[in-house]
Length: 320
Image (tube, rainbow, N blue to C red; front, side, top):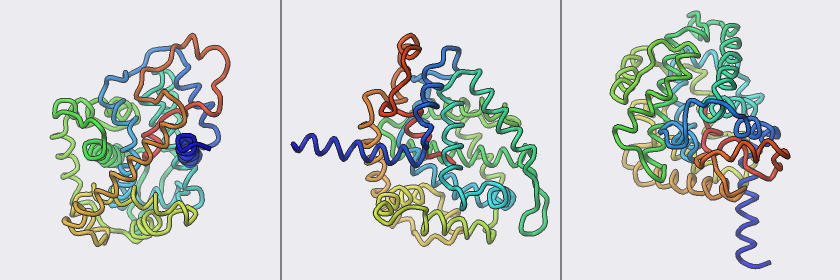
């Protein structure tokens, strides 16, 4: 085997392993539905939301999003009580990644279907947090926190680890575009600019706390991920990058011993390394990626896509 062929084999195996974890066995069929369907879409490949959600920076940013979201005790109680993040962590990730892919890259019809499905699930998720305070997953106030923490993390990830960071104007457009499906999900008046987004996050600070469930989830995510030992170093680079994106106050609340200088000099370079590895591995699955223009529908309406062709997304597979 030549050096080039060996490198391509390694690249492909890495891409297949990543796809199996974050997109699951149904990835080819889901991809066919997302990319092959004809119809109006909310976004195009030139739109900031498409560019951000298609990028490999979503992998470390997904870690950031989870860690930040869990600081709201009611959001964390809902995850701990209803998501099955420990018993079926990959299933939860695959469902979330498919939702992000459908609402970003899919047709409006399919996006609306995905949103309706999640709304119906939210209607049934209710309970009490560790202090006995009631919560419900369809509470617009709680939905706003989850949305704001998520898109702030994704934007931070792209601006740090993406190949071509957004301009200030494009970043504002990203925030506004991410609010389109969020509004239909139940978020009332989602932010439409980075300044509004940061103001929303700041307004939630008094409500945040490190609950026992949050500490347990953080340990699971950072110290005991559901991966074989040989895969943990690679995951560690992405997790380090994700932690480096957290605001200092969030790291302090979670008890993550990562001073700013260590974050800058160690964790962030590791995040760049891990993101580059993901980008390289996923590129080995096929020539076309989600950041490219969707293929001609006439071509896709013929024979089904081979399982070896690209799945429904690259970056959005890592979302919370």
